[in-house]
Image 1: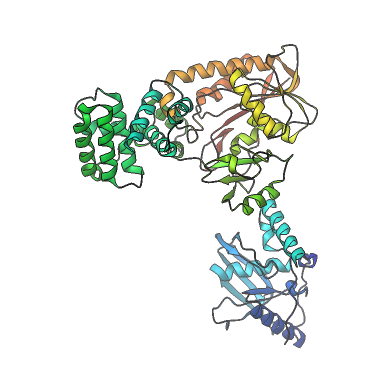
Image 2: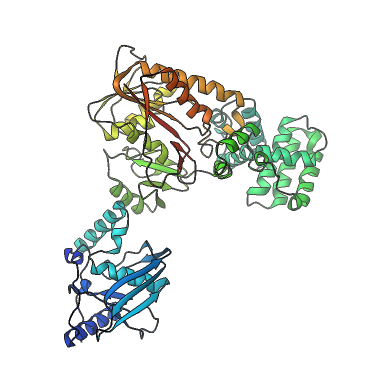
Length: 166
Length: 412
């Protein structure tokens, strides 16, 4: 197992589009283990492969308190959605910023597990938010892109100030 | 303390006899230590005037023939209902104030207020909207006709206190950089209407906000800030601002465009306000004393004098000052201004008509009359940005913006 380096916004690699996973082998399993470890270590509740500069459609999520409920979503597809909810989202690629984003309330997705078996999952509340947030990463979208131009500019400005301060 | 109540009753009385609120505050409050306390009572007394008059009639059998005593009672009802002070203190102070005003009435004041304290929780909310929200009756019947779905929200918003919205002078600083200054100064702000406007609550003194002296900002409601966009300006144009004072919209135009802008206002006094605002914002204005009827303009802005019914939350006194017959006077004046402007507009030019009224009589009706008289005038569509509440080109006042009316005419 190994910790992976998380790309930080505004790294352009966060905007790459991930490819479909076709091979379900040990290397995929190893990547998922490393992603999970990285997520837990960073105290996140979700991580997309894009964030660790691997551009394949893989997501790990664990919204449980005791961190024993790992969900691995490979090739996730949104098949049903309705309703609306707002949540103050954060992101391991944009550390320190929390902003309200509107998402679907209820979603149904299909995905594959580590063995390649096709499954479906219904989600609402935080899990639904988290899945939609991570699925956005796979198409190169970071949550702050939902914010107004002004708020995006302010976040970029603060990040560049922080990185200058070292 | 009780002296403040006497002052507040006097100010209310003078206001009702027709004097202007700012003049009265200047005259009565110059030497006062409790300016804000007195102002709060006066504003509250005005806001709830019709309601408190109705309440008072339930507790006083005969008409009170001393106006100041009557206003003292009404103001005190406001204090009981809306200030956080202990009720018995409020009543005791009011009785002391009554002794000072007219010794014959202090028993009555005492009895009425103590009765009110006992009974107030049993009083039912009045059915009539004009009493419940405390507006002139004609005003409310007008709104009910014109805004069958929104009138109650409109009445309610007029009774709230508007937050301060500032417009950033982009010749001096960017919105983004100005927000940094606010954050550094620990000033609470909120971005509204898709994060385009900065709204600040609890501004006691705008000169204390960062960059006031350097002209970083101007206080202006989001609705008023739309005028500049609606004018469809290009650099180099000749523009006339016909009712310019205090210069809010004129300064906005100059912050954004390099144009020849003539500012005119009928009030010579208020022209000084344009001068001082231009100076603070570091803009160069061309204030004209007379309109040159031989000159022709590409754009004309007519921000016409009006009832102010769309900005009650900023000018609560108009609830008392406006009379039904004023509306007719305003609409005649508005039509006349449009006619005057039209004569000096270039063909192919545009004229923007703006009021801060929500009465159809001053808006759509004036537009209809103007269009029927001027066959070379065509009204054009205006695109109102997302987030604003509106009905055609009438903005509906709400917590985020005032109730302005806009119409743009092009000349063929």
